[in-house]
Image 1: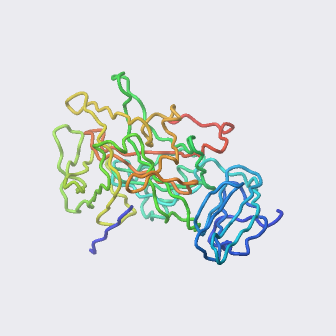
Image 2: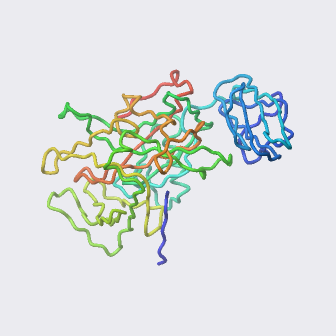
Length: 400
């Protein structure tokens, strides 16, 4: 068998961001009509020493190309200048931003990738059926979390992820929460001094479709949550999971809750070798059955472990919540603690990044830990919403 490795990391025509729309050159039109929350890519065919784009008199870019994007309807007065002694150029034009012809949904409309790490709910959330391909599972994941379906999907152990988007660009409104994601976290009551219970934090990454091709192949940025700068947080962390050998004999433990403590081997960038055990509550394969790779590799930020065995004998674990900035970290009853600001985006060096909006959102399990009979810490989610589109008239069912 060949070894395989997957590494995851009306009026004038409406103009929007797509690969079929030509970039605007020197013959920039006098007037454009585009839907709100839709991109208008602009670029000069001429070159010069410097460039300047203005909106309503305010400078917005000094690059040769510029993508216009607006949340609010209205008329925007734009100016493009080439600042060059030999070939100066100045042109004024307008962009009319209209309400979309088909009303945008505030909820997830597309799942682009679903790549869970091994885990006890894998092949169950969503359910794998014999013969399912990756395309089948991807469709099931999309059907689960799109719109108001509210069906949980699991991301498995550390690094497992899902990538999704909306039917429009989510605008970055400075100072405001931009989108929200629902999980299944809950609080327990034995420790009133700290918020904890079942907190399985998922890290959020975002991407802006700068090349306007509609697929998530642009640069990704992490939303820096409350633990991003914690000294115990590991950045550029890697975990490699090995497919369990067919000839492997299960190794049980004394507790009776684990049927195989040496089930799925893993190795991380810290030099640790360990296993993801199998428990008595879930006897299906924990390896994604549609994936025939012999090794799965996940990279990202790894948060400090948040689980404490308060019983001292493995019977009662509390998974304490991080303050903010993670999926499946606080109960859904707390909207602010499950909402996210695009302003939190940082690059690989931890430097803040100013994004006008995002087109793709990725969530991955952010902790690598195992809690006895509770199993691995795995992020689950069931819905996402753009908070800049009115959702008050749409009932949101209680998530258990």
